Amino acid sequence: MPELALQHVTKLFGDAVAVDDLTLSIGDGEFVCLLGPSGCGKTTTLRMIAGFEMVDRGAILLDGENITAVPPQKRDIGLVFQHYALFPHMTVAENVGYGLKMRRLPAPRIADEVRVALDLVRLGELSGRYPSQLSGGQQQRVALARALAIRPRLLLMDEPLSNLDAKLREDMRAEIRRIQKRVGITTVFVTHDQAEAFALADRIGVIMQGRLQQMADPVSLYESPASAAVGSFIGQVNSLAGRVRALEQERARVAVADGLEITGVGRDLRPGAAVTSLVKQERVRLSRQRPEGNDNVFPCRIEARTFLGGNIIYACRLDGAMVNALVPSNPSAERLDPGDCVYVSWSCADCQVFVG
Image (cartoon, rainbow, N blue to C red):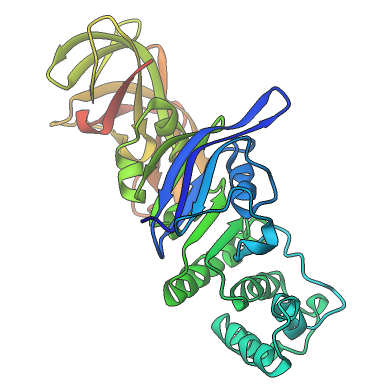
């Protein structure tokens, strides 16, 4: 039996469908990220699990118990929000122990549980400080300790790292993963940040327009998206619209521009079908000499170069199409300049073709 199950859950705001017939199961101790663009319904889904939004249709089960109509305070769920929601007039220890106090636990028991929770997040020495005396990362860890102190059945986290700077986000990702694995608590983490989801999750659920598009482990999601919509959203991708000219099993020759044909792989294709071909930017190669061995090799002209620190993006103009190549910024490698004429290439296996 899954720890958490959503069965055909739907949420309406007036005539607008925020969450549309959402069904998913999450196993005991699993870390699942709900990933999607802003406004896709992922936070609304989390709020329904927490009990802050009513379910219009469907059911939510926690450890086999139907909690759809159970009030939030009786669901035994730990919550960590984007805004830490710490009480400014309370010390760290008082904030962490607040939920235990509301449960009317005896003071010695509260002190023990607070000490355990703060040690877990490595903040035991700061128990007497106030939130204003803490950094953003420390406040986030206090919020996590408060959620875990009540020993909940389920942990929900809503964009908890979005207010932190890039380096601190990376550190907190590692900290959250360490704590979740140590505690073994089932966790649902909402984010729009792909790097966050790939770094943290056992499985990722991609939500778009209120519907679950795909649920998979990070590697499977990245390498085998279920649709053009998911593939275009995951990673940095070149998207080329065209029509199938010829098929050989799962290999398709696709006309994407006047005189330009590419070869890719796809399923359920037919000659003449309108398709979208996706090629990840890091799978595109650039070379001065014409390369051998790839199915897709084209002369191109470098239109622009964007330096990103560890990588460089080259905008490449082919006949009637534009393709970006993401290459490592290697000081020993030749750097191309706008106006240079080179060859661009990618393998057939790295070109995924989807109907529509």
